[in-house]
Amino acid sequence: MKSYKVILSGGGTGGHIYPAIAIANELKFRFPMTEFLFVGASDKMEMQKVPQAGYRIVGLWISGFQRRVTFKNLLFPFKLLFSLLKSIQIINSFKPDVVIGTGGYASGPVLHVASKRGVPTLIQEQNSFPGITNKLLSKKVDKICVAYEGLECFFPKNKLVLSGNPVRQDLLDLEPKSAEALSFFNLESEKQTLLVLGGSLGARRINQLIESKLDYFKALGIQVVWQCGKLYSDEYSQYNKRDLVQVHAFINRMDLAYASADFVISRAGASSVSELCVVGKPVIFIPSPNVSEDHQTKNALAIAKNKAALLIAEKDLESSFESGFSTVLNSKSQQELLSENIKKLALREATKTIVDEIEKLLVK
Image (tube, rainbow, N blue to C red):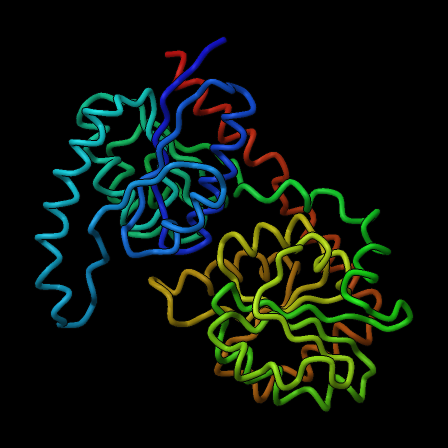
């Protein structure tokens, strides 16, 4: 039985971590004897999430370059040099057969060193507008798996593979889970359910919006399953189990949350967008304007231009939310159109496609 040594690097957000874990799981399924090592940023969430998934991780002292003058920027050259030296040590001692990057600052040094040493390399870009790390790495790596068409303007065309983003396997068939979902969340089957997602940490502006619209949802008779995020659970837990509202700091059974929903309000991070394409429910995207390169807005636009979701900018929430939500709520044909169109954009075999490309690099 073949065995390999594989390094996966990426992190900072769940959008970089969970695809890496999904790729590792598929590689482990195909090659059970394979040895894995994750490389992340020493002060980011991957240092907890990766071990929870059963994999070993080492941390680099690395962070991004701030766009304004800060003390952190003075440290950046030292962090970069330290991370490059540690990456050399990691590559020399682990001797990987392939190195995979899923984005985030930590993937830069180790992918750079691996490519210089002639180790086969692949990066997976989740967004419709690539981050700076992957743009820099694209000239050095062997393959680039992307989730959106039209990225030839950022990456070498001959390296591109349209794969999609890895999504959790338990989201691929939600229809049989509807009854279980209603029971799990203690929802009334005759009422429609709105699922609100702002990310694992939460989204302040979405939380403020939902709080201000609770009477509006009550008047419509809509149940609300509201993931407010860990940072905001104390602030919004007062509304839990009041007027058909459930407030969750974090939802562990996302498959059941999606299965229970008739409508979804969500941020537009790459992983969320990919999941929602697979789930196929009517979606209103409220992208965060505070992320690098405004990539969430670009992700949401890529879906909205196909008439597959509604997009409401944060600055337009006061003037446009109720009219936009009502348009979807009161029109069965609009719901069906959004659902059908977003399903067409789903790339359900993303993880397998990416690992197929990795396997080609391994057998070269």
